[in-house]
Amino acid sequence: MSRTPFAPLFDRIVDDAAVFPPGLAPLEAAVRDHLDRRTGPYAAHIGPLLVPATSAAEVAGLAAADERTEGAPLEVGLVMRPGSPVQPLLEALETLHDDTRVLVTAGELGWSSEWRQVLAAEVPVVVEVGLGEDQERALDDLAAAVDDDHDVTAKFRTGTTPTWRWPDERVLAGFLDAVVLRALPFKLTGGLHHAVRGRYDGEPMHGLLNVVLATHEAVHGAEADDLAGELARQDAEVLVTAVSGLGTLDAERVRESFTAYGCCGVLDPLTELGALGLIPTKEHQR
Image 1 (cartoon, rainbow, N blue to C red):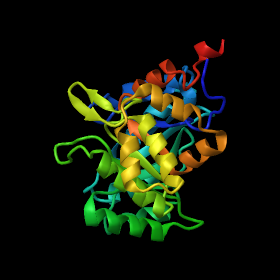
Image 2 (image 1 turned 45 degrees about the vertical axis):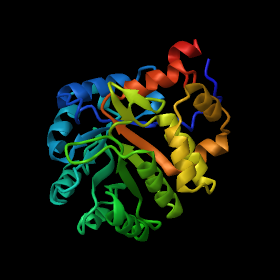
Image 3 (image 1 turned 90 degrees about the vertical axis):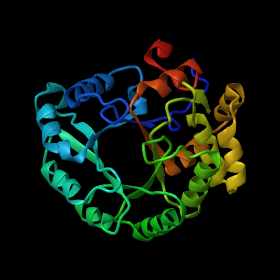
Image 4 (image 1 turned 90 degrees about the horizontal axis):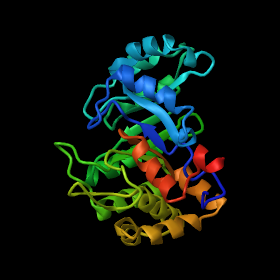
């Protein structure tokens, strides 16, 4: 039985990044599996399938060939990695603009002097930011672009890449503090596979529950040092008890800020949340 009587905290919390490293699922398999999960036990907690913008035409073909997308289109986020040009994303958005089998939920790209070109496509825009002074400039730029017509979300990488070191609790806390101060919604990407902060396969990883609680504290005015303390906690029982104590209004405020995160093993965190009693599954509801 779920500990929490409300849905908003974990609704559509995990975007399906199966095709991205380290998962690297073939696109055809990723589309098939994602559509299968729409009727699976964790369906309510899974967001769109994230795909490279350069695969837009292939995605359209795969969606058209699957009868499950008729009347219920495949939801996708189109992604361009930081450092990539904007034009392929603009072309992908145009390719899928009138497609009835594919619904584009967002265009995602790295911050650059060209990112605002995507605003004209009239889809939500997610912009990945870096560290230090570049992060400050990027977040100021994003905040200045937000208005009634433009839906803009900041994105931050919590996992390592060959060119990106793992951001520890102080680095992540600084980002959370910065986006909340600017009233910018944010999403995370990479490395957030587990419910609780710890070392997994010898590597440090942030925990989903830690991020939820740190976001809760941030929207209530906590500063970066306090947020870092929340992000560093490794006692699962303490974290579960704290999350279970959040009310519906608290959950809604957290999710207005922390919109989602991309995970290549989309079921990994959800099975952990289910085991902790924090989300219901169909089995629990019988």
